[in-house]
Amino acid sequence: MAVRGWSRFREQQHLQHIDAASVDSTFSSNPQAREVFGTSSFTRRKRMSPADRRRQITVAAAKIIAAKGFWGMSLQDIADEIGITESALYHYISTKNDLLGMVIEELYDSSAADEYIYGNARGEDRDGHEFFYFPRFCLDNVLFNIKRPEMVKLFSILNAEALNPEHPAHLYFINRQQKFWRQISAMNWVLPEPYRTDINRFRHLWSLSMSAMDGLQLRWLADSSANLVEEWFAYSEELFPENVWEGFSDPSEYGSKDAACLLPKGLQSSKRP
Image 1 (cartoon, rainbow, N blue to C red):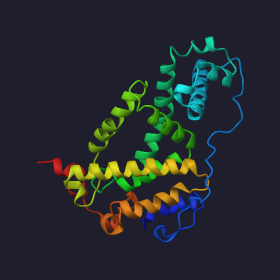
Image 2 (image 1 turned 180 degrees about the horizontal axis):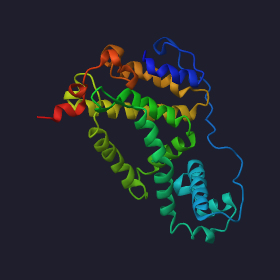
Image 3 (image 1 turned 30 degrees about the vertical axis):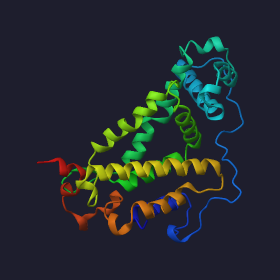
């Protein structure tokens, strides 16, 4: 997409500006799975603050779940990874299920992720009204996730495992999409027609975009040669065509020459009497 504000991300990541619609896929014809965790073990320190030890346990659990899945992980695996006894783990957790909750809440659904993904998609109009730009929000998800492939793998494995109703994360994943949509639909996105006046159509676009991202990330994990950012730019050409989304893709597109109140172009405008 030809969005002015996104060129700096290409510069920061040393990416050449490419017309995404005209180049071949970055996926390999002979893919090899992406290595997301190093082979080195944790530094084995006997004395740590409770907060540091809890963090170490959570990170170790994420690593092992990403390798073995939740069902395949044991508490002894965690203890061995960080160099303590299994009984010592119980000073920080009550059950294996508690550990799973720590991993999801503290590592994946983190405040740092929200600050980056939503914060960079946020803008204000001349009157101080806050708006969010959906294509930029999607790009921010991709840019944040390339920094944490281990979390992407962890989330993908847990999501698949949790299809089993007996999995402790089953209800979390069942309810996650509904919770996510409630949050998304309450925000004031600046949108082109017909999305800003048809909440169901915007929901379909949101669902399609997130599903496309999930599928793309799985392929990226399976192919270490793939460039997730470039592939998402190619997806964006289809999801957010420039002739529809120009001016609605990134906060940088709103400038002094466009100094008009954006309230009529926001999703929430359709909800006002």
